Amino acid sequence: MARDWQPDFERLVDEHQSMVFSLAWRLTGDRGLAEEIAQDVFLELDRNMTRMESPEHALFWLRRVAMHRAADALRRRHVRGVDLWIEIEENHGAPPEDRCSPLGARVEQLLTTLPEPQRAALVLRYQEDLTPEEIAATLESPLATVKSNLQRGLKLLRAKAETSLKDYVRPGKAMGGALSDG
Amino acid sequence: MSGQARRWEARCPMDEMNEFENKLKQAFLRRPAPPSLKQRILQQRNQRRTEQLHNRTVLWQRLAACFVLAAVIGGGLTWRHIDQQRKGEAARDQVLTALRITNRALNQIQTRLAAHDRDDHE
Image 1: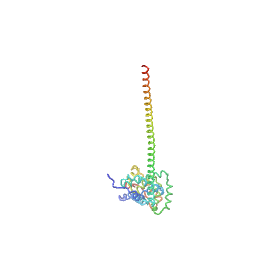
Image 2: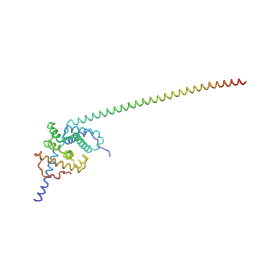
Image 3: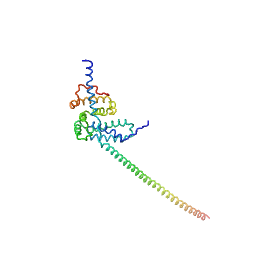
Image 4: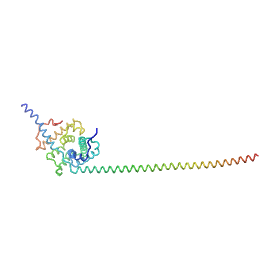
């Protein structure tokens, strides 16, 4: 089948730089590292431009590579929750366009304390609005693992939020059936 | 407890969860990329392409140099081989000429000796 779509690198960067950068930042908790990862991901895309078949394929490819690169960077740096907290606290000095809502910033702080697989699943679920099946395909993990990570991550995040984000979260009694799409 | 109340009790945690999930979605809006990110990506891309082009040029130059070197060495070896062949042929011609001269001289001597023997018999 002939391909009608011709990938335009600059356009792809324009469209997806925010997505790649956000994924990397939320997964690593390090703004500088996230910028490096985003650059690497797009340079890798440039090397693989001929393999891109459609805009959806490019988006899927970018998400997958960004997640893998961020996970690799995390493993390399052995970043721990405490370090990430410090890094995110430093964001108060970041340019205004980088600052998110107070709730967003505090949720991100809590997010960095979660184990990496749960964090990855939650970021893809709530930032990218992906279904568990799509997350499983992106992370190349079994669907059951992804669902389990989502449930556990959400539970843990909610438990942490109940203690530290009292202004935003109503205390809940039970946590069941958390995954509307799963 | 009425059935409706039980249903509400059962639905309530789910509603709270949905509310929490909605808040998460709001909190997890994509962050705008730094304005310089695209510029840096394009700059690195151009730099990499320039390096690739340079590397390719260097590679071709090296290949061309190797080709010229191989041609010079091959030409030299061929020339040497032809020269040796030519010298060999010249030497063989000289030997043949010398043999021919020797043969003629021996023939003359043999003719003379034959004539001398004939005179002795007579």
